[in-house]
Length: 100
Image (cartoon, rainbow, N blue to C red; front, side, top):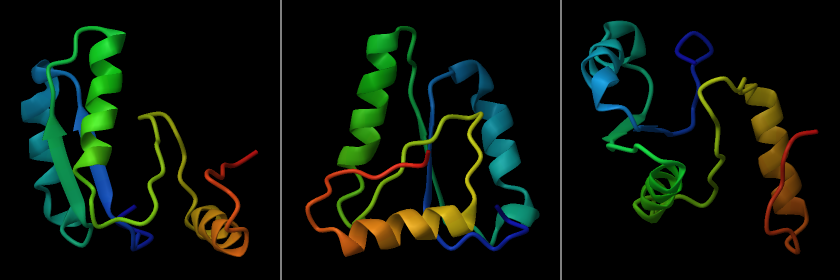
């Protein structure tokens, strides 16, 4: 994301206290300083906790118009993300858009 100068906000929800130090160390690297990253640590031990974490993160994003959920193994292609946003803007009847 840093190499392609990703222009969107990135919100990370980490559900593992065990990995907190590693994630924070990684995010503090100078190579990621051009990204708009917001980090949240949760202690999720169950699937129910995982969904609470996602709901809580979304609730905190009051100033964002669009939110895309991604897992740690998803690829985010900037042009495709822009296409999704443009498709959403074109069709105001949509409540959600996604890739195929």
